[in-house]
Length: 383
Image (cartoon, rainbow, N blue to C red; front, side, top):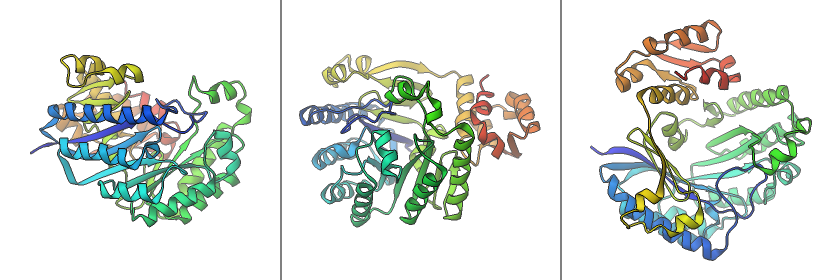
């Protein structure tokens, strides 16, 4: 029986870099993009030789803006994936798309090459907030894109939303959620803005936090999202993710539960057989690697880090506890051969006494209070 594997293909291109974004992405010419696609196809071809004992259960094309590529380029990438990897017939295959970058022809091509899930980056239904974020689209552009996605036959759609934005109020946040829920997407991701060091947003707002919603207001926005989306039939299955029954993102659940994943493309991260590594993040260097050459892996894969058993236990806890169902002591015992309470008993007792976790043997999950201060709670599991 083949081992389950998640594939991630990084497309590092966008029309214009958003001011809050710290992802490995940026604008590029058609020539650069087409050259990158060919290099990525070569990487897929050559790396797949090491994974013949695996079956891809999810594929995720992320970025950047993958939908910026020509439809033929996406089709070529997916053809290479299907030819080189064993892909489950029931695989969840997602592409990220930004409003204004997809046509009906592109979407029909996506369907034809096996893509069955679309993730659309709306962020806000307020055009002023979108402009403040540096987004290239308007809410009207999003509506046209969403209509095309449904017209093309996609029945599994995610919409990304963002709270705690410059100039955002509770009223405008509720309006964004209401407009989104009216469209009935299968999945909604609702994240708070994070000021990432090195971004224009960090420089602009780090010393002027008064221009952003305060911490109390940010928490109220979070509570409002949880309550409203529950009313609309969305189940919160992870701290920031909500889905209708049966539509939780399987690719992301795999990350949080420790499934092996292979990142392909510029700067992509991987976790294989207990070892973490990432690809070369410099586009010029990546483009010059001869993928079938004798030194390809050495040049491509950087920062190889085999996780110790202690580190694997830590990740099991602080990634798994992001899920609303929490972690299982039975799974911990099966994976590590040790009783979770023997390893973490003191921490678990302290957190339970402070009402930060809920123990429902054999599972442990965050309480509502624990979710509020999840960064602190999860840090307690570092051995």
